[in-house]
Image (tube, rainbow, N blue to C red; front, side, top):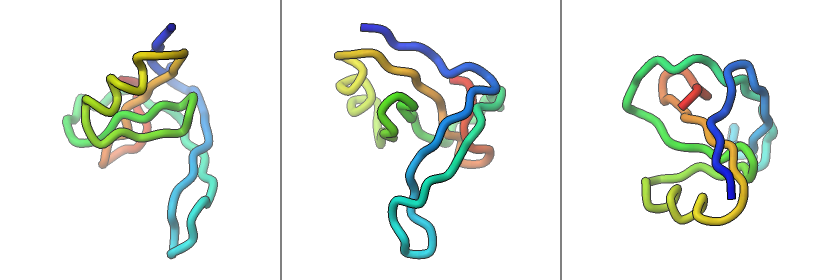
Length: 79
């Protein structure tokens, strides 16, 4: 089992809802951390975001994962 922090400049695709359409693929690039506290953890490996720490901890307890922080103001950031 390995958990890694996303690297600055790393790009990934994720699915989102836009204009009532689900599964719209968007691209994101991981930026430096702004140090903000508002956001959510995101597993780049599996394309899953977490509503709380328990969900994240349960998810990363098995397998390999690359995590980033999704800042509500700036988007994907280095955790």
